[in-house]
Image (cartoon, rainbow, N blue to C red; front, side):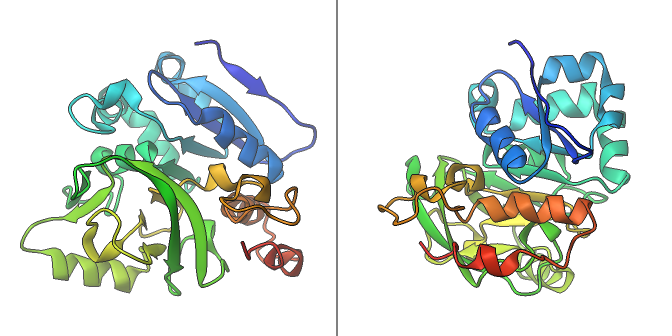
Length: 275
């Protein structure tokens, strides 16, 4: 695959959007960062492995949705192994430096199976596996925000948002026998960004995403990049070119990186949250 380098002027934060066999949401994800005021380079995983030092030139990484390596051995498993055994040191240093990382759908699966979520310095205590009904889900869902989440990616989002989901292995499972203890730990750390309003796939407590203790590494099954503008909302919108709810996930992290956490344009943004 040919790399796609998308440049905009200024000193905006620059994100590496990972591409590779079966990943198919890289362009939408790049467009979301650009719309929010950032820069985005779409780079194939093999090229990153060949030159791991390239990570030093980025302010953040996005692992987009799709079906990396055809979901062989389970969703996200092969890509996670590829990163672990061929990119481990550089990737670990990137995360340790405090730079933000987001994994969306398949990217969330990769982050969990890589061991970065939910507890990066511990043995794996969670996974994402087949939906309880055994079916692929493709629908819009309402998400209830967790008020105490530490992640800047979801800062000041309204109590309920709506995003599309597209997955067959999105059921979050915590270590058997330790579910309640782990759940309380996640709550106390503020590592749960949102819950499905209703059970759609059997995820423990309807959890739809996780972040690491720092909040900078975020994984989520819903697709914020698929709701960048209200033109793509499931119902006709009176202002289709206004921002969709997914846009604000990307805008949040750009504000964080730019030191603009006061959300100067929040009032403008809030009027577009309602679907």
